[in-house]
Image 1 (cartoon, rainbow, N blue to C red):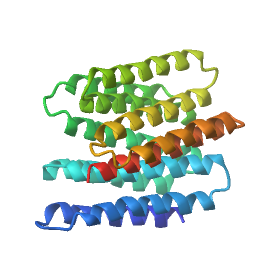
Image 2 (cartoon, rainbow, N blue to C red; image 1 turned 60 degrees about the vertical axis):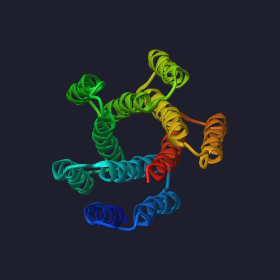
Image 3 (tube, rainbow, N blue to C red; image 1 turned 45 degrees about the vertical axis):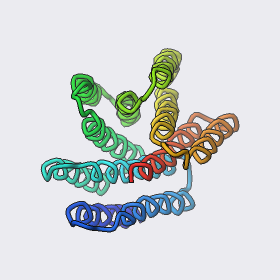
Length: 270
């Protein structure tokens, strides 16, 4: 099952490459691939036997959605090659993973690398290039100092938060939007200081990802077409958090809502 999912992803990626490079290609193909990713997200969730597998499902779908966005915005063959190299690493690491913890690291690390590309693509004026470079340095040093898969996953989640904050700021059209981003980052730091375990840190990362993706999705929703769906997702996020009986369930909540908001963002960039 796991290899079939990855194979579907790679087929979709190469199809998108063809779409991006072929003049006059139908834009609906991109939308179809986003919807196919959501279908995989829902069908895989039904097959999961517990929270660890659900976490992997969330992280892997984020890789798919971020790769679609990155390829959609790629402007040069070299940039597309870098994205495909990341996906090749994703496939190889999945095939050699011994369990869900390693798969989760694989998904979150690839998501980090893809978000760095997206942040760079959106940084038209080069105003955030130093920040992006510093985040990637923290990502690499955090990986070297990590002593377990849980610490690696926390590293990946935290760097995703950092990069999503950059993307949110790149797209912020008002000072109020920027203030919302900085408020989320303040909560991120406070929650990290209060976290009593690595799993609580993971929840902090996943929840801040959800909030930042909602900011990005709302900012990109120029016509208000997705406003109701975004707000419904945030309502689910809050409702499921109040009902979660453990940090592991909270982590699933954060990752799943992030997938849904990433899908909305991908559709908005169509």
